[in-house]
Image: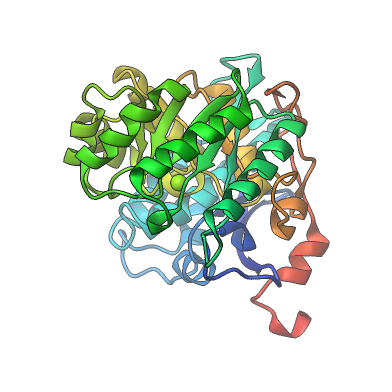
Length: 391
Ligand code: MG
């Protein structure tokens, strides 16, 4: 056994930033957990890099507010659930369901990578082993926020991305319809039908409404009308925290209602299932508690006849975590991938490799130890923002 010897937290930022849009792939915070033999595992989280770094490196104040290196060093990385609990209790006071859990998620993913490498097994085997033979990712289709463009331009962009996704092998996509006041609800119905016509039958299609409505009646009016377009789930219909609204909408909805992309831990997901009555929850693996917690969430969903389709809009580390999660969890029909074949993002494309092939909608189970990806150290040195002199 080689114990944990250190923790590094490295903020990374691409030279190209899109602060006026919703692209989380232009920056990240890389977490590296090292063992006594010089091996390391990697993780990331989708939360502000400088704040995560500050959080993970804060000095210990008391037993419920501890320095993360102190929590980790000396532990055996394979004791994943035990370490998770120590981390959770160690940041319980400042952390809870927000930033502390996001930061802990990055470490948990890195521990799966490290323990897998130490034992020569892919991370999903540490999660109980494969529950399926092939993986099924979905590709998100997002032309960006309107930012002055016409709906015709946005739809043209969407159709181009559909084509790129199908060309890359995907057979499941999510059409982001974040058109806001550019279209009326009834115009939106027609655009969704148009999207289905372009995709053709046989391609699994989901929708993300970007929190369009504050009233479940309005959302229902649109969902009823697009049900004949064979929609797998409808995401972000109502305001994120409106659980009662989600429950009203879900009742008798012709389409699975999906939500909880900003939720963290099984405790918060339980509220979404029991009070929100959604059919699909989508916590991000690298925000909601890591691979340890997402597996518990998936088991909780099985008890509620629901499913988990994790949100993931970051680098190839998050995409790789998605693979291992889906491999090990039956209640996971899909996982989100930001395809480097569809989006031109330096960090997404080059931070880690290899990029798995998608063949007729599916991926092979990963075989390499840990997360099965190699870190591009040269890119890390080039993009890290904590050593300004080196840039
Ligand atoms: Mg979303």
